[in-house]
Length: 435
Ligand SMILES: NC(=O)c1ccc[n+]([C@@H]2O[C@H](COP(=O)([O-])OP(=O)(O)OC[C@H]3O[C@@H](n4cnc5c(N)ncnc54)[C@H](OP(=O)(O)O)[C@@H]3O)[C@@H](O)[C@H]2O)c1
Image (cartoon, rainbow, N blue to C red; front, side, top):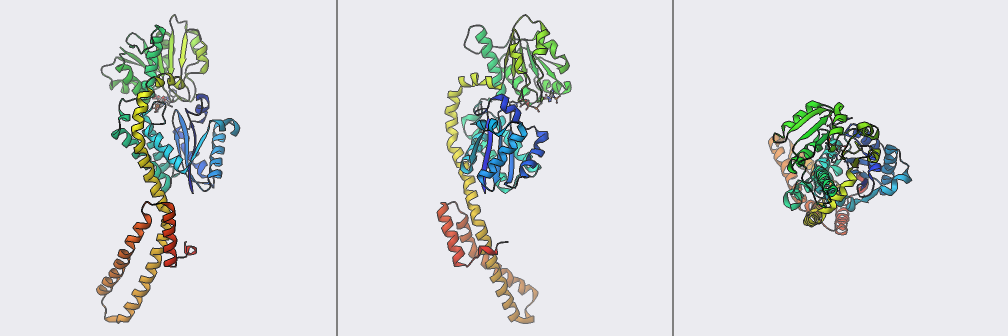
C-alpha cells in the first residue's frame, strides 16, 4: 500500500485551469465515491480550495493508483490527459506526507502562513469521514496534518499578522491606487467608494481589512440581503449599506473599487454588464472568487481595471521575504510531525506478526488451561476456575508486553523486518494462517 497525492495549485496551474477543477462541497460525495469505485484506490480524500485541488489516496500500486486519479481529474474537468498533465504534480509516500504537512501549515499557500487553509484541511477530513472515503491510514494522516497546522500557528511567528487572500486583495487595491498616483506604495482607502459582493467567510475578512486600511464605508451586496445584514452587525464601527445583488449595476456605476467573493459557479460581472455604465472615472475590480466572479472580458472595457487571485502575486511578492524567514522557523516542526506519522505507518508492518504471536500464545494458554482444569476434577469451584483463567491470561500478557512494544517502537526498517522474521521463526508463526 502507498500514500499518493495528485493535484495542482497556484504554483503549477493558471487560474483558468484551476477553476475547471474545483470541486464544490455539493459534489464532493459523488467525486469521492467515483474515486473509491476504482479498485486501485483504498482510501481517498479531496482538498479543494481557491488555489489548489489535491487528491490524497491510499493506493495498492503507486503507478496504477496515480493513473486512476489522473483519469478521474480528466473526466471531472473535461480536459484531455495531455492538456492536464503539464499542470499536475504527484508525490508518493514520504514526499506526499511532507507536502500535506506544508500545505496544512500554510507554507505552500500563495499568502505564506494564511489561516484559511487549516480550516480547509479540517473540512477535507470531515467530508472524507462523512462520506466514508477515509480509512485508518488517511484518517491518521489528516489528524497529524491538522495537529501540524495548529502547532505551526501557535508555536511559530508564522501565525501572526492575520494574513489571507482577502488581506492581499485589500493590499492590491491600495497598491494599484498608489500606482495610479505615481507612488509605489500602499495608500489609504479613505476616499474610495467601495463595494463588496458576497457575504461569506472571505467577505468577512475583506471587511476586516478594509476597516483596518481606512475605508470610510462599504456597500455590501449579496444574493440574500439578510445574510449581508447579519455580517454587517459584526462591524459596528464601519458604516455598511446592505443591498440585494440585483442592484449591482447601480453600484458598479458609482463605486470606484469593487471586490467580489461569491461562490457562484458563473461570472457575475462581464463586459456586457459594464459596457453600458457610462462611467467617468476608473473602476477597479478585484475578484477573489474561484471560479472567477468576473469574466476575463471585463478587463477589456474602457476605464475598467480588473484583477483576479493570480494578480495577488504582485503584493504577495512584496512582503514574502519577511514571511519566508518565519516559514523557516516552522521547518523543524514539520519534519517532526511528518516523522511521527511515518513511524506510526512503519509500525503497522509489525501488526500481522504481533497478531499471529498473540493467537499462537492464546492457543497454548487455552489448551494448557483446559488440561489443568480437567485434571482438577469437579471439586474445583467456578470462582477458583476464574482465578486460574485470569492468572493464565495475566502471565501471557506480561510476557508479550515487552516484545510487542519493541516490535512497534520507531526503528530502522531493516531492523524491524529482521526482528519480525526472528520472532516468526522462533515461535513458528506461519503467515499462511492469517485470515
Ligand atoms: N475560503 C477561502 O479560504 C477562500 C480563499 C480565497 C478565495 N476563496 C473564494 O472566495 C469565494 C467565496 O468563498 P467563501 O469561503 O467566502 O464562501 P462562503 O462563505 O460559502 O459564501 C458564499 C457567498 O457566495 C454567495 N453565492 C453563492 N452562490 C451564489 C450565486 N450563484 N450567485 C451569487 N452569489 C452566490 C453566497 O450568497 P448567499 O448568502 O445568498 O448564499 C455567499 O455570499 C469562493 O469563490 C472561494 O473559492 C475562498
